[in-house]
Length: 202
Image 1 (cartoon, helix red, strand yellow):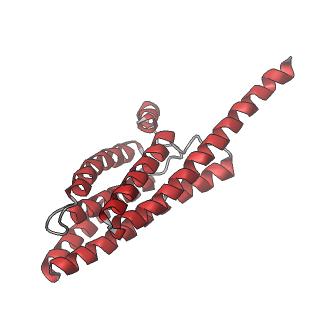
Image 2 (cartoon, rainbow, N blue to C red):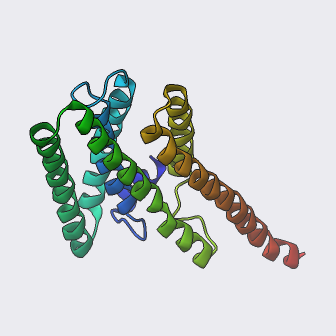
């Protein structure tokens, strides 16, 4: 939320990346479909959580498109259309071409791929943080939410012995820890550097 308050206040997306929200939207839609009874039994919690997540991600992407410059707006709009096209194709293919056990495997592997791609998108932000030595464009609450969501679903997947849930979320947990450690390191470093002129002036 602080990221989007800043975007709305400045009427610009600056150097913030919209890709994590696009990846998250696609992931939420696929995981929501995986959790519904047409695909899987007994994991309705996955569908519930991801339907809420999809609504939030769609709101974030819409705001991002609203305040992006023309080239980024066009690219993000194209990606958004692509996300819904892919999701519609997944639903059609899984319902029309697969029986129930095959459908669960098909959508399950897609959910793993989408989760891993979503968790790979922060690598761009991690690279930006290391290159600029600043956490300005790595929102803390997004990193924290990614970590908490990943570790929760990792535990849930282990409890259900569902490797379609616990494997990608295990990867997400590791990446979440890396982001939080980077945030702690570079935010502390920036505070120390900001104090140097004050020390020198004395």
